[in-house]
Image 1 (cartoon, rainbow, N blue to C red):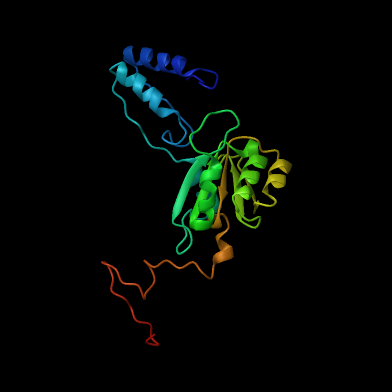
Image 2: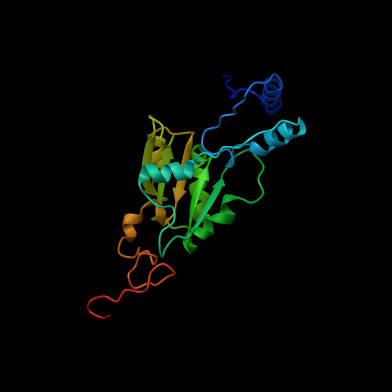
Amino acid sequence: MINTADLTLEEIVDVMIKRAREGKLVARLKSGDPSIYGALIEEVWAVEDAGIEYEIVPGITAAVAAAAVLGIELTLPKLVQTVIITRESARVPMEGSLKDFAPFVMRGAVLAIYTAVHLIDKVVKELREVGVPDDMPVVVVYKATWPEQKVVRGTLGDIADKVKRERIVKDSVIIIGKSANPTLFKNIIRSSVYDPTHSHSYRPRKVPADGA
């Protein structure tokens, strides 16, 4: 078992290829899902170039794990139909920025922001700059599903102070949008698929007893 936290890509790939060529079964284990911010593709290319067969086993990404911890849906009938997984960074170059995607929070989307809790002030500032209101629900989940997990609930207006009080600076996902606090919209949420007045290929419309 090798801890790769302090290794470079080249060092990680070198270990995997050498052990595989020795006839060993190598498992490259990542937290979450390797296909979401898992730096997967460069390792795949290196293994392919070495002529080594491999299989990718999907995991559970932090946004989905957080939703399970919170007991919420990331999508909400009538309200939220789009999930945007994005990130914030102080040093890593990115095409596009959080401000490009933040406006969609007011247009039926929820943001799941990775690698950003240490930049919570910047996140709040950028969302405010594009018009996201201070009462927009926000929840931060630290180490979702781990024994030491923490949940911090709030709004755009108070989440930064709450996160700082908990001294959370890494390993978190920030969920911003109506999905973060669905109880506020309990009188609106209604799934059409399971609504008796809605017909679909598996079930005809059922007329209520009052004939409405």
